[in-house]
Image (cartoon, rainbow, N blue to C red; front, top):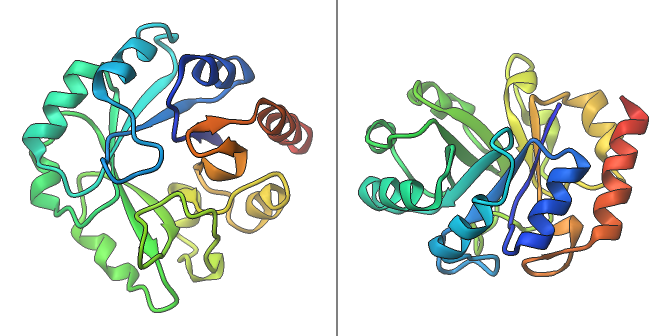
Length: 202
């Protein structure tokens, strides 16, 4: 199972996550996010990272033109979309793309059939936020044939990771708020605990 740590805003946290074994780091380019980072600042961090870790840019309802421009400037490998982006818009993005869907109790999984050109991330539904809520959703809603193909997000922590592996076994997990000291600043103690726990249950 791959691990992405999202909401990176500083070099210290980025290098710490990399050294612990994160497979991907997420940089949020959505102005209204509490974990927003300027593209130039993300570029300066990314320059210092190993070429073997994925650098993911997170966007919400941005234009393909702006996404492509920021991706090139920052040195991203992949794009993650958390808004209402269409398959047509995804086709105009130059990098591989992850499309996030916020899952409520009445979420219609058939909508995923319209998206043939991206990977899927499933997150908790919120009226006010596009991600990073720290809340889980009902994983039993995920169709069985999708479980090991998706990226799972929403309220993931050391306390439920064993259950996630047993009940969902996703391709990857996307973790952010549960590993923070405060918005945009990771807790190195929580990171160590999380990765040690992961290693212990493999």
